[in-house]
Image (tube, rainbow, N blue to C red; front, side, top):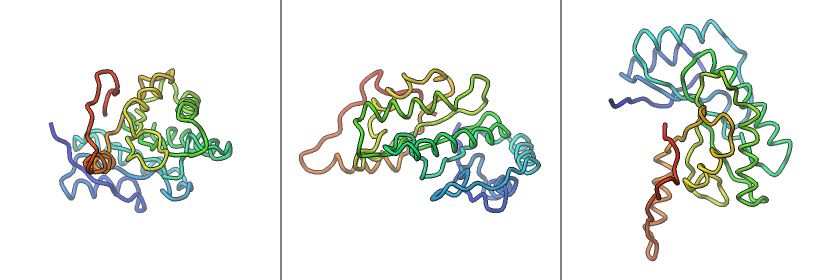
Length: 206
C-alpha cells in the first residue's frame, strides 16, 4: 500500500500537524523535533502529544517520521559537538516514546578531520549509548548525497554502522531520494557510470 505525506511544521503543536495532514489527505508526515538549524526544543506538552496519538490511531495513519536537527553531528571531530549530538538524540528519543511505533531520522553527517572508519565508529558509539532495549521508536540512518566527506553516501557505510550497534533491531535506513538523485546526476556526467548495489551491501530499508 502506498502511503503519502509531507513535511509539516510543529510550530502550532503536535495535534495541529495531524489535523493538517488529514486536511490534505495524507496518512503520514514528517516534522523536525526542534529548531533544525539550532538545537532548542519546545517544552514537552504531553497532552498535545496524546491528542496526536489518538488522532493517528483513529484515522489509520501509518508511521510518522520525527527528523533530527541538521546541527546534530554524531561524528564531529569536536568532542563537544558529539556530546551535543548524544544529548539531543537521547532527549528526542525520550519524546518520541510518547508516540510509540514511529521513526526517528538523522543524517550521519560530514566531518573532514577523521578517517571514514573512525567516523562510523563514533556514530555507532553514540547509538549504543542512546538506544534502549525496550524502546518503541526505530532510528533511521539517512542516505547522503556525497558532498565533501559525508558519511552515508554509500550503502556499505551505513551497513558498517549498523553492524557496530548492539540494539540494531531498533535501526533502519531512510532512502532519501533527493540525496540519491543528486548522487546519480553526478554519476551520469561524461566518463562516469552508476555501479550496481551488491547483495549484502545495504540494510533493511524503512
